[in-house]
Length: 172
Image 1: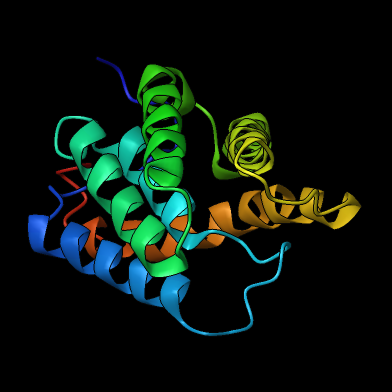
Image 2: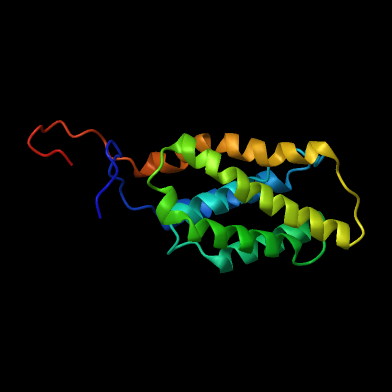
């Protein structure tokens, strides 16, 4: 497979780094910051990122387990986050081969419908179970998650980047 022009060759990702990123994302989501409607779901961003960049290593089972952890921590309807995370992971894995051909900014633009759909399903499940509608500020979270996409990409791909090779005879 040919790499897109200008894209850097990456080293293999460490499974320990993936697990650490999920633990940090779970900790940030669980922090008692006065969970308001417009705060981004960090696990959603991480699951989508690893679902696109490492679909063989991070799958539906990881999304389901992290979703159950979020359900327990937020006292939500059991399985609400698990279903949303699994659907997001499915959509991310289905679009992974196509998404990797785009630069980070176009990826962020294409992630907006995925994040918006995930939040819409979560909102629908919340309303069905007796919750209230959050209003217009509920649309801010998917936009913030799309804005966080380039930052997350830069941070999560940093350990995989190769140092520049000073030898001009070997371009890779």
